[in-house]
Image (tube, rainbow, N blue to C red):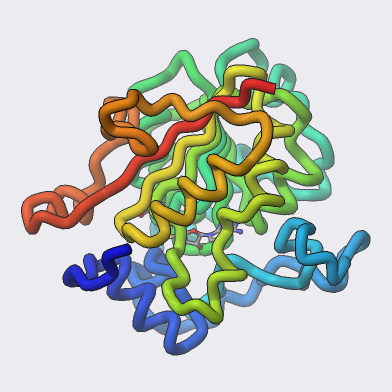
Length: 283
Ligand SMILES: C[S@@+](CC[C@H](N)C(=O)[O-])C[C@H]1O[C@@H](n2cnc3c(N)ncnc32)[C@H](O)[C@@H]1O
């Protein structure tokens, strides 16, 4: 493991945030101010809550995120107020039928924790033949994504502002996804916080049940120790096959469909590493 390299903006914010028991880099893009008051329901209060360590985080009362204060820009507020009724989805909508949701049969991609949404918007715009569902708890990010989706006239994108684990569990149909994307999840670097990492055996099993046979789980991280953790969890998870070629396994090169973020391009110039993992459901 090598945690000695200079932290990137993501990891640096995660370390700082970790000290304050928080790790949401996307939140740092929103100016501090008004409270983000629409926290999802506390998982421990949900039906099916359990102490079982093998259960998904949301059933154990553990969150992989921290909701932080963040003032909304005008555009973000417009997104949440004016665009939400058309593109927003809630847990109360129940189990989705993607064909009736989008009005067509098309490949379906879900992205968890899209932050401010830059990469997801770019993908939805450059792949009109594919439908996308974004899931994020950070209100300014959701507002920004909605505002941009509307300005670009995107019809192939829908959004949840919820804990992604609950959306996977309660709203996505079994075997419905062609790809699930998890780009730069909070690394929760301190050992005592590792239980808050979203990538856990129960999470990848939940993802597997939502993937079509042959569908893929694509993860990327700039935190080497988390990349190793992901590789270990995935290698031990039943029903997955690593798509990495032998020469780079367990990692793959960044595929063209994953846009390079500004922060990542800067990291590359500074010689920081990024690790992509793509595993396919094979059972
Ligand atoms: C480090 S940021 C990365 C954001 C973005 N993917 C990027 O590359 O810039 C991680 C994001 O995941 C979100 N997140 C963490 N756990 C989540 C969960 N269980 N459900 C929905 N979003 C979550 C956080 O709010 C945060 O915006």
